[in-house]
Image (tube, rainbow, N blue to C red; front, side):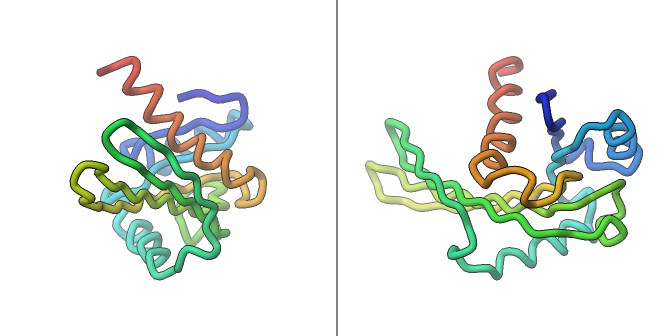
Length: 141
């Protein structure tokens, strides 16, 4: 998805060639990390040990459930990530509670960005990650 300041991409796009092409166009990227980048994914999973205090949290509500999303960004060195100009590792945690049953679930998603961690406010990082998927779902589902 194209934004004025950042291009977002799902894990399929988290590749050296794609990252290089994006930064050559003088724009930043925000790419989701999954198991297709095992070393980077394992590094990102270490963020799971962090407790909520450094996280920015935003509650959300739907008719059937309530959800809280939390985001935390940390600096990363490009060589450590092995992607062009990588500067930030982003951890987005979602906690969902079904109103009717009280059942809870949680999930962590990880992203890598060429933008430094403090270039965007925490709410902007959340908007980038949520906006990518909302845009795709609107167009393709």
